[in-house]
Length: 354
Image (tube, rainbow, N blue to C red):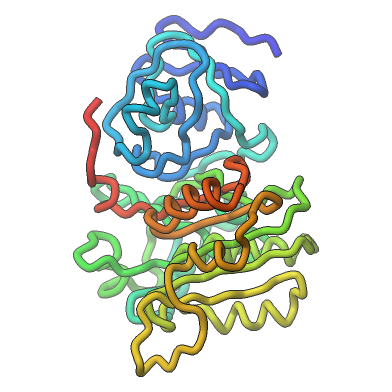
């Protein structure tokens, strides 16, 4: 593929092995430029906290903004890796990255949404359903997320818990973070018919349908939301690859849609379910698996060399799973697909100055 020179004052970014190219304006991070021009590259938080957008730089100079060392260490940066979410090209740049194809990068839209229902599923999980404009449908992949744009311009990201065919609205699983500007409102003051501004879809977490490998679906807490959307999508598309859901919580009540999963097991013979509880109390009468959910996968599947893993939830779970599955269970690194649920507090831990 031939590429045209970048406009004056900007730099050309070329992504191998696809050969796709786009221009980044002066001072513009690579990822923002890619999203603006419909080039789908892998990413998660967009805030230098999760490392999902990390890729290898083959040529050129990139300067990073503030980020966390666990997302990109000094050693990785010295070895030529970049975070596209906060990496700003200083010259033309060539990157190596697996990426979303042209056709599957849906346009990102801003739109109003109306709260149609609020259902408290546990002491700290609310399922919020939103109605989107009927004449302005948001197209998205099961597993992607949207951002609320708050009045002060702050943003909060939540994965859509339903597959697109189960629309036209979207379902969000919102966990209460005490003191959280947005979630305090959701749990104390939000009402049906409230209008909120949203933007999306974002994220590169979605089912890779070109594979026939058996799948591990790993969720902690409300990380179940995008996994639920993927399960709905599999059923809708008639995808019968073997899939095992490992869903972890501290207490049994944290598995807030266990009854939904049980119903799906009866409908989907290819789906298995392993609930895992880390902090069960005697009054829970829990007789199932205990411990860390990502460890349960290793106990059952010590060899993941032929699997795909889709992992969602707390950064500690996703990061531990990624490291241990590749190091201990021979999972190919490019078969680990993740969405790490970084909170505002997570984003401000351990920042590395540019």
